[in-house]
Image (cartoon, rainbow, N blue to C red):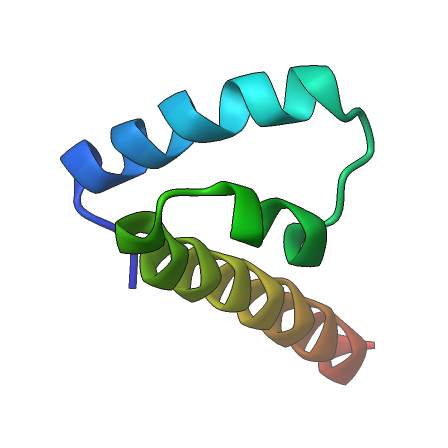
Length: 64
């Protein structure tokens, strides 16, 4: 389930300078650098994106 737009925007505003300062940073490395109130939404989004990607790949394989 997508995050509310305001939370997504706040999260991206915090992630942008982290990514700029640490190119190639992983989610596990970035999470502790976020304010605590954004860590839950950050992981929710990461898991949602991962599962969506994996499900799409599985559905694609089933069609073959």
